[in-house]
Length: 448
Ligand code: SF4
Image (cartoon, rainbow, N blue to C red; front, side, top):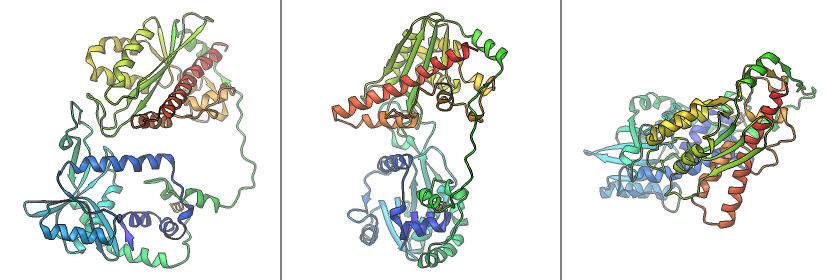
């Protein structure tokens, strides 16, 4: 039997569905995909409160014949809100996040843990609509529920404001014929041998396929020697010297880490807003002077907004700096502007921090200092290993921003003291390397 997720998979790539059914052992989820799954489960439970006091159709079998039977029983009993309402039609099974009856008419709600209505979500709702109506239940409307990006938490979460529900019935109706024609094609395909499908844009869009590793392993091995790119820099000396000369001491090298909770955890924050929880700071008062390191890492207490402590410590620790050097200014400047908006009592001092900021990416982005191996990539994870191969992110337990973000967010729900202590150590080591790297990069630029 097909399901919503199998249909979506097969409509995107026949081979992906065939592998999912016949060679599931080749499936490999990325960490990012696993994080999205976890997020989806939490958000679904929140969204159910949009229509409270409903009945859950899915219990021991997820979702299956018993859930479909229970759904029919709830409908017959006059239940007006059913979570995970399950239907079977055309040998296809779907579970609807929320089925709600209003003024005697049923409406279908699909919940997504994003603040965007991506086009691929229309297909999700369309296959549900096809199966539900095909099974005999008339639907007055079909909605996509998303986070309202303009929602600002103030006090307890107001579920009716956190989510928006947009009718997409018109778009869903347009896809009904296509679904009817595609389902038998997918079923026939599944009865045959593994289909031959070339890798292409369907492997990474709308999602990274979880069989990418398998399909890549089937590609013919290239015998050509890999192209070697040179690390020898081409330097525009005058431009580099001018950049360096404009950086005034004392210098504070600053880097933030952030979390992006879908459901806002703190007052004065929005769905998926980036919330700074950590910074690393290397301070040098004068040229060739000693370098002092400090950091901020918020306590993992869900009742304490990490931004307040961060703002106050950052203001104190950067007050002497004439230049606050960051790498790729857009990120840090945007975070500070958001904190000015959310905590206007600090706006004046934070504005002053922005005024003192300079961007260490400029010499690389403008190719004042360039190597072939950089290509068109100028992030610190590219530039630092080229300029300072002795400083490596590879040795670290946490080696990139998304991992840091997930690790910190997980700590809010962790009670094991040893895990908490170790994770905090790894977070400190990661952020420390970012600003130490900036110190080293700036020293190299100064030698030009
Ligand atoms: S990696 Fe690409 S070709 Fe292979 S199954 Fe996935 S989508 Fe299809």
